[in-house]
Image (tube, protein in one colour):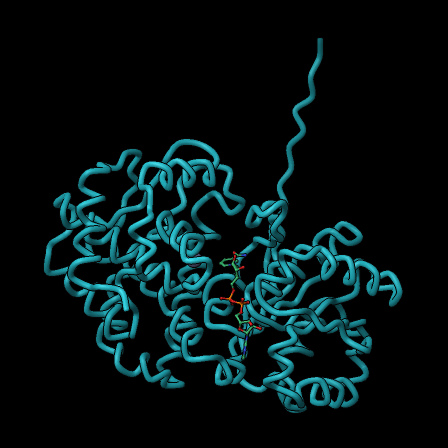
Length: 381
Ligand SMILES: NC(=O)c1ccc[n+]([C@@H]2O[C@H](COP(=O)([O-])OP(=O)(O)OC[C@H]3O[C@@H](n4cnc5c(N)ncnc54)[C@H](O)[C@@H]3O)[C@@H](O)[C@H]2O)c1
Ligand SMILES: [Zn+2]
C-alpha cells in the first residue's frame, strides 16, 4: 500500500465595481477590468436578459459604440444572446444549450470574456453555462436587480434547476469581475426594487449593528428608492457578503453552517408554497421577522430589538406574514433545510443587534406560536 496526498490551493481575486452608465464612452470600468488580462484586444460576448433589454432598448447600441471607441481593448462578438427572463431560463435547458452552441459557433475560448447582463436568474443560468463550457470561460457579471447587486451576483455560485429541483445542477466558480451599475436599477418594478433590500437587513442583523442602525434611520429614503441611499445600501451589503465569503474559511460551503442563510429556512418554503407569488426577498423579509420573533421568545434578543426589526421591515414596505404560512409544516421545512445544507441542521438565530449564533435544534412548539402570532398581528392582504 502506498499513498500520495495531493495538496494545492488556488487563490481567487475579482474586482466588484460600483458605477453608473457603464457603456458611456468615457467610463473606464469595463476597459480597465479587461486590461487586467493584458493590454490587447479581448473577445467580449454579450448575453442579455430579455426583460432588461426591453427596458433599456438602447443598451446594445451603446455597448457597440463603446466597443468601437475602445477597439484596441474590445472585440465585440455580435449578435448577442438574448435570454428569456426569470426562473424560466433556469428551468428550461434550451437557454444553456443555446449558450453552448453560440460560444462554439463564435469560437469563444477560455481566454475570451462573456458579459452577462441580467437579474439573478439569468446570472445563475448563464454563469453555470460559462463555468461548464470549455470547463470555464471568463465571466463578467452585470447584475440588474438589487438582489443581484448586493447578493446573488457577487458570490461564487451558479446554478440551474433540474427535475423540478431548484439549483440542483451548479458550480462554485468565482466570476472574473462584477460591475454593479446603479443606473440600471431605475427600471425595476417597485416590488423588485424593494425585495433585494431584505438581504441588506439580513446581513446587517447578523454582522453589523451600525449598518442595521443606518438601515433603520434611512428606511423611509430606501422605501422611496432614493438613489444615494440605495447605492450606499447595496455597497455595504455587498461588502459584508464579500467579506464573509473571503474570511469565513468556507467559501465553497463544505460545512453546514451558513450564517448568510439567516431567515432563509422558512423563506425557501414560503416561496414554493406561494407558488412564487412571493419574490425571494419578500419571503426572506417574512423569514427574518419569524426568526427574530423566535430569537426574542427564546430570550436571545430583547423585545425592543425585535420591535425595531419589525418597524424597519414594515416601513420598507414588507409584509410580515403570508397566507402560505398556514400550510407551512415546520418539521418538514427544517428537515428540507438540513438536506439543503447537506449535513446537520444549522439554523442562524440572533443573539443581539449585529450578532448571531448557530443552533442545531428548534423548539417547534415555540416556532409554531411565532407563526400564529405573525398571522394574527400582521394579517396577509
Ligand atoms: N447564485 C447565488 O448565490 C444566488 C443567491 C441568491 C439568489 N439567487 C437566484 O437569483 C434568482 C432571483 O434573482 P432576482 O431576484 O434578481 O430576480 P430575476 O432574475 O428573476 O428577475 C426578476 C425580473 O426582473 C427583470 N429585470 C431584471 N433586471 C431588470 C431591470 N433592471 N429593469 C427591469 N426589469 C428587470 C427580470 O428580467 C425578471 O423578469 C433566483 O433564481 C435565485 O435562486 C442566486
Ligand atoms: Zn437570499
